[in-house]
Image 1 (tube, one colour):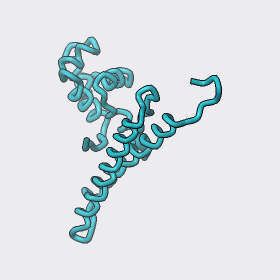
Image 2 (cartoon, one colour):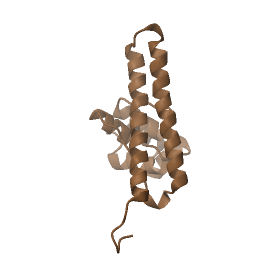
Image 3 (tube, helix red, strand yellow):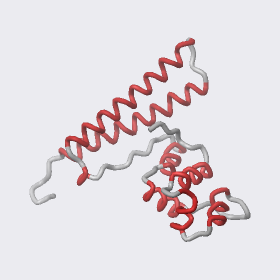
Length: 159
């Protein structure tokens, strides 16, 4: 999935609501808000405050997105990497993670190659390279963490 980190909290809120299953109407209903009030919170209009962190988290948990943690991590120059659930890991899952990581590395290399076709990298190309690289590094970190979780030796008496 190709996705860049959003640049403002407003963009994050809008993306979360748009990606919520059923869209704005269902997101509003889930939060117990009339749709107009949700729109006011998302666009900070009519004197409304933005959605709270808890509201964004609630919607993202149900939608399976990570726009908000990606945004916050990028503010600090980092990447968000969700921790794998050890109960859902097996060797097939590790192989799938490995393949996804390889694809993301290939995407970085492809963007670099295309950017260098004219001998220089402009600002837009640099941003695309760094976005793809961030996704690759997050995937690699997740992959390595999953390997450790699945194969970590346990002390006697531990599950």
